[in-house]
Image (tube, rainbow, N blue to C red; front, top):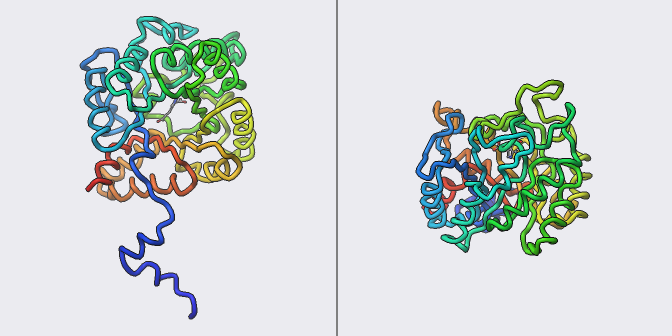
Length: 328
Ligand code: PBG
């Protein structure tokens, strides 16, 4: 035998020499679920270890993450029912607690990278990402609403705008709206290949944002989120987002879509982001709770696999725990 791959695995020092990929806290983004009550701290039952927090608690959380080397955050609002309407008008309201929280965080921690979420679902009585009109999700009537939402978020201090609603033409529409208001340095992290996945359950529980039963409108998101069967369609979405001025291309979910991450990485020069979604984290946590998996080893391996597939940005509910292990 002339070639023995095991020679390069003999010691920890050798394994470090030949390691092809590193994952550091610098690659990770910590999700934050924001509640209006400043001191709130409520668990997300279907995602153990994750909480919905008021801004005072968020400030503590961000400080804790910074100490561990996590400097990027993606924030989502849990909007009380009385603020919801058909057009999601509270998204741009001057009273919006989500926008206020962004301003507070960027004032207190100017060094962080703060990523927003652009979609109607947290604000909409219909629970859909786009505007429901005449029994359908109206693409073109949604575009001005999300453009205005993005501008309000940029004005509040968000560094990166994260359109997650999968409307056609949204990146160009948001880019023009931002530039028209002078926010030329505000980046767009587009949810390029966002699949109609079964793995968003705990997130929708956290925000109470699941699509509601409506006359004629399906309670799933299959008319705008992608079919899990499709790979080439992700390349088509990526080409559009790149042409429309996106600064990052995101794949979501991550673990079940590692092939898509690799595909976009190889076909494009924009940085690739991956969203390791709530359901993907929840199933690992559930197995760990039963003693069936070792949480630390399994979570680290999952994150590393996303990195190996080609993602440079990884959004994960495990971000903070990983950063803690990284420094041990
Ligand atoms: C919707 C949005 C969702 C997630 C991020 N943005 C849910 C959905 O599309 O229904 C899910 C993230 C997760 O499951 O962790 N604007």
